[in-house]
Amino acid sequence: MPIDLRSDTITQPTLGMREAIAKAVVGDDVLGDDPTVQQLERYVAGLLGKEAAVFMPSGTMTNQVALRTHTEPGDEVILESQAHIYYYEGGGPAALSGVTCRLINGDRGVFRATDLAQVLRPSNVHFPHTKLVCLENTHNRGGGKIYPLVEIDAIAQLCQQHQLKLHLDGARLWNACIATDITAADYVKAFDSVSVCFSKGLGAPIGSALAGSNEFIQRARRFRKMFGGGMRQAGMIAAGALYALKHHRPRLQADHSNAQNLAKGLQSIPGIVIEPKTVETNIVVFQTASLSAQTLVERLKQKGVYVLAVGPKSIRAVTNLMVSAEQIQQVPHLVELALIET
Ligand SMILES: Cc1ncc(COP(=O)(O)O)c(C=O)c1O
Image: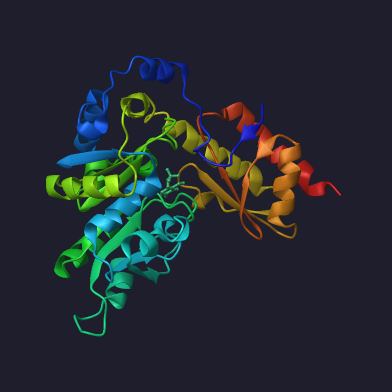
């Protein structure tokens, strides 16, 4: 069995989840007939303390529908420079919403209210209308960094003063909640919209949801349909998402301690640079001192360890429910062997 640390999206549904999927009661969700999808949407809205939620096939779609729902073409959206919405969603903001993106360089994905204040401009015919600020918690390219709640509160206050909406890409919000002991509802109170994923650490095969006010979600449903995300007997996948939410959130703690152990194991290897303190959740980013990241990735693959190069000297390993503590223990030694290969 390979030790697959490429992403937490590689997870396979568990037996219990497969049973829940098999038994799901379904209907045509575009016609409003799928009770399992409706149950999931109510459950997610409740967990996040929002009025409503809408189920979608992917995190990319929930984010892009959120942008389209909050904005009109020509508006400006403010994001951190490595934000998934900007970096990894195929130019969606420009192509699907016609918005311009204004970027702020954060500290591993986290910017502060003072950084935001510096890029806000007065209303003037020369400038686009700034409508929306997006944050990401935890931050993928920031190595799973947690957004501190005090920073979020300060940013939300500034947004309110400037009539800006605030969206959260919470694909890994569940990880932030487990790591901080802050409930999801408390974490997202200040946001107008929140996107969450079921197919990452939680281990469902497919699915994300967008949550917000009743009015916002009603408008989002129109754009979901327009973007091709209206699904028919979607209860088949909603059942997996519900099962994941109810059974797999506490176990994220195991992924976090596996990530911490991996970071500590890698720290002592000559040729590897990592600071375990920077590993806050399930994402471990480490650097090679001299070898190219891609070469090490290929050598590790030969040894049954799958990771991804995320920069010329940067490698990402994401702990997930398919990888045990025992397997994680083996990884530093395999990295050491891969480094000395010629
Ligand atoms: C932070 C973040 N947001 C959004 C997404 C998009 O999710 P999906 O792959 O379901 O489109 C990802 C995927 O890895 C992600 O890491």
